[in-house]
Image (cartoon, rainbow, N blue to C red):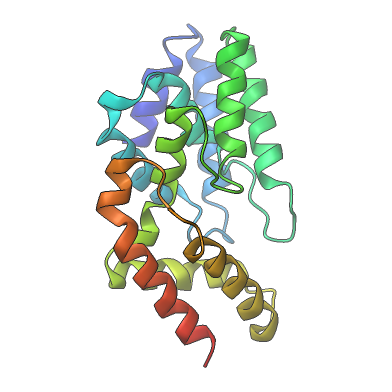
Length: 206
């Protein structure tokens, strides 16, 4: 599914199938690295499904989907600049396709926004970051699978270090006035998300 979506998108901007396939192969390779248990192609599929449910509300669908494919292009738990490096990759690719500079900058902003998930003046960015966090509001079984996969990605850290950092992140979201910035995702996921986050904190605090 994802490859078809990617090829269809890129075909609007390039008539070079070899170039398009090379870009897809890099995305596929990066997201299938052995250390990716959550930030993989399954995450991209889930993100796409959630964005598709609000497609009518998104002004620039193409740029949003570009951001989807590149927002976790670089993912290294030992580094703090994953979003910045992923955003730069998106800038390089969209620029190579002669996409308008303003649109390129929005794509960059969209990816950088996944670092703090703060509210934006651009509704497309809010829909994107909300969809990116949709796993937080899933049923408990899916949420449990999610947080266990995240722990596997941070396997290099001992429990006492990981738990402290993870609790800090979870409390950051719980203490937000709204985790989900758009009414659609807020109504759908907010209550369950805060319940899930608190339950994970309780488990980590034992």
